[in-house]
Length: 600
Image (cartoon, one colour):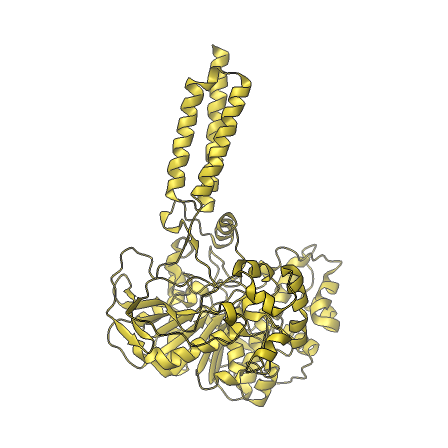
């Protein structure tokens, strides 16, 4: 009798352990509520079945019972796997619809934010779906629609490699400190489609006019990302009198595949920059339609982070974008160095990459690629993360346009974070005291030794020194060069360094985003009162900049231009004020490696 009780106790403990593990899987995978209900029923039912029936059966009957149990676990996991859904425009349920608004394409409605100070319109088509014969072609104008278009959900995000929900949950939890336990509102996967050329508008409530406009381009290495992400929505700016716009655009192989065949068929002889052409089309749409939302088409500021900032930089040198915007806010990237470190490639290199795509997809032409299903085509998405000089969108190396003074922006607010490179070198970059100089040589040539002396290895920790160098090179340097060019043109430029530590991404790449767009409240566990105060200061700077081209205003710490303080940047941290640029000596070595002969 005692032996029977021990066996039942062992079974119970084992079932509890399995239940905890299965619950973790369901939670990390974001399975639906139905999965939890079925799982609870299964575990309770199997416990009772074992207690009342299987406990006295032979070992093979018990084994058969366990086999059936695990099969049912698997089926529950599959049938309750999170479905694809479009992200709602606002986070709360049953928002009130706005009045009907008319634009050239037709009538539409949006929704109010929770306190009814902002109107939100999401999923507005700005171009025809780039599918079928329009794949790998310049974007075409969007069609008009009949009736009233309901714009209360974001459009599907652009095609991109898709991670398993468990991986996404672990990344969000570990790197972003974003654990949303048992949240029934996130039990879905964001919809994805090749039909993704839509934009979103946040406007001040009511009948407003001549509001400054910010057009935001999201990052993601030109490979991933979506405009629905809650860390850069425009509600806070709309509350301050700005009309804020974000957009989807083609990514990876859909947006940056280059092929001579495609260049020949193009009326503009272009290939390789379809995503940038999408951004241009969205910008044209804004110029044509933004007055209907109360925006001033003559006062547009382009903004972007990471690859979004690189994209903004590309629009600054594109002759096709001339006159479509006035100012620029650029965070953590640019392509204005003589040899950009990322998001830009030589045209010959871009064309040569097609062979790898063909091999991966088992095709021999772009025509065959057009016939593939979008999910199949996305299998070759990984390597396509760069713009190129195609002779149409970008006509020359970007730095040449700046040296001629033919860039499009009238003023610039830009900068970088204190530890930009750290998240990119965690995996795949082995740096030791022994190979440190050689690793640097790959990026800096004969300047590697001098840079190693500037950032020496302390003890056995070569990675920390390497991270500091690459943060300066990959990110800060592009802003230094960009600022330098603008100052040489006697244009106002303001540069910052974000140093505010927090429990989220902190000062790593993209850590500034929720501060810059007033979105700290989406992850309140990561921030304190001081963080909210800093965010308010930053949003005030950017609001002033969007209105006048000068970020300074009443109650804000003075932000001098780069021309006034060429060796300093505005520190955005525990305190706000000017600090010496931490990479000044590094810039001199990179200048030499890049072939600049620059003296102040």
